[in-house]
Structure formats: structure tokens, C-alpha cells
Length: 223
Image 1: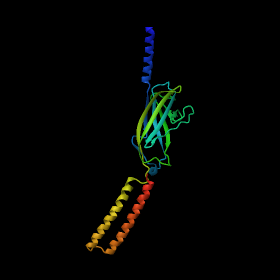
Image 2 (image 1 turned 90 degrees about the vertical axis):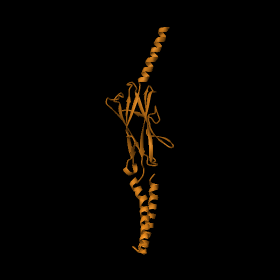
Image 3 (image 1 turned 60 degrees about the horizontal axis):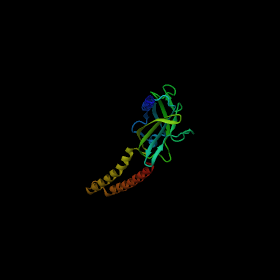
């Protein structure tokens, strides 16, 4: 009886050791940390998400990746699965989207996987910084044996103008108003005529109105 108990304990210990040694390592190569994407300015339409997937257990036969990014209203998945046996957002990984040092061998150095994500155009991803959440799973006989996750930060800038142009639009009205004030002062000293200042004033007001209107249009076009 004692012998049977020792055998059962030994089997449990072996099972526990096997479970503890099973591990997945996920490395996000693209996007790089804090990488900035500018679809409007740079014409970027997609990003190739590049993840290195290493599974220490050679007998795990099925591997999946679920990739999402966090927004204020919830999570947006960047992966979809067309497999009817395991429908959902976790994409099955294979030689169709991964390359291997040795065919279909997931142990070190693992699989170099690429998932193309096309940036949505209507509506666009709002300008901001997002947390990219990458989740990997390994299956045997339809059951998950081990999972792992990693996080990478990236940013989206959907403006139609860059920060230098925005700064210039802010400065122009200030410069025009300053020029108008200087003109009035020069009139007081008799350096220039009142007619000249009047012309400058009209031009300054028209220019300021044009800048305000242009800024409003760019504000609408710049999320």
C-alpha cells in the first residue's frame, strides 16, 4: 500500500515538474518600443506585426496568437481566426505566417511570425498612445497547455499637418498684431503716415481672419 502511495506521489511530482518546465516566450520585434505611426502624413496603410514565438515544449502541436490594443471604449483585436474548430480572435500560427529555423519546430530559436494589420480608415484610429497586448497559447488535443503574454507601447498620429506648421499658425496672428501696434506707435512719432498704418491694419485683420479660418479647417481635419 505504501509502495502504491509513493508511486502516485512520484507521478504527481513528475507531472508538476513537466508543467513547470513548459513555457512560452514572446518577443515583439515590430512595432518597436514607443514606435510612432503617421498614416496621414507618411501614407502608412498597415503595419506588419513581427513576433518571435518560442515554445519550450516540442510536443505542443497547435499555437495561436491573439493581439489587441487598448482604447477608452475597450479592446480592439488585430487578429481574427477563420478556423471553425477554434473560432474567435486567436489566430492559428503555422508555416503560412511564420518562418522556422527547422520546419515546424517551435523550440529555440522558435518561430518568426508576421501578422499584417491594416489601419482602419473609417473611422481612423484616434491619435494617441496605445498598449499592444500580445497573447500566445499552445494546445495539445484541443486543450491549452501553456500561455504567455507581453505588452508593447505604440503611438498613432493622424494629423494632416506636423507640429511645426501648428506652431507657425499660432505665431502668425501674434506677429501681425505686434506689427500693427508698432505701426500705431510709429504714427505717433510721425515716422509713417496714418494711411500706411490703415492699410497695414486692414491687411493684418484679413490675415488674422484667414489664419483663424485655416486653423479651424485643419482642426476638423486633424483628429
